[in-house]
Length: 203
Image (cartoon, rainbow, N blue to C red; front, side, top):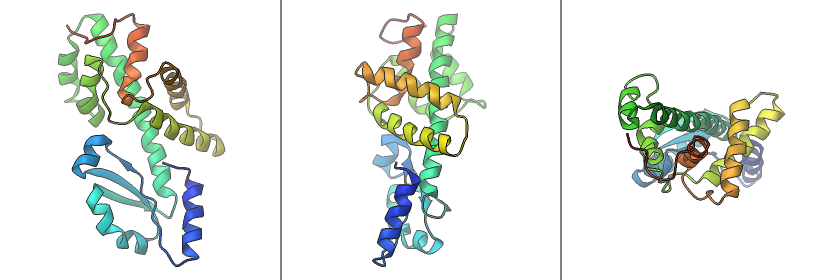
């Protein structure tokens, strides 16, 4: 992910050489990259978007043109803000359930069938419960993306309290040496605050 204006600048420079440009950031974790099932958020003209389809369809299964160049990056910013809150809320919920006396695995099973169900719940809750964070998306890379989103939010005067708070938590985890783990390690912050020792949370 990069700032939207950078993509617009690149597009202008390429246009001078009669080269088309589509900005196409992705989401879907390492799983999506491996299987070619990423979500691709595109910014560019309709003509250039259509010309890019053979390449885009190799990497993604859900490909959307958002608007002109730069809009792909804007959509990715929105995506990163959403997952910021979702990861943090899941970490809080699982730790709360465990400390309050419920089997967190059963809680995941139960809430996954309701409105709290999500890709993050399905694919990252076990990492949090096991206190094991192999790579999906590095925390430090998410922090970089979050910095772009927060800077843009300031520019367009949109309050972003959740993203701002999580950014400070990510900074602390990175300072402790956890920046290269999957960002589900946000659970470390909540677990440590609750006094839960390292290792799996078991009923």
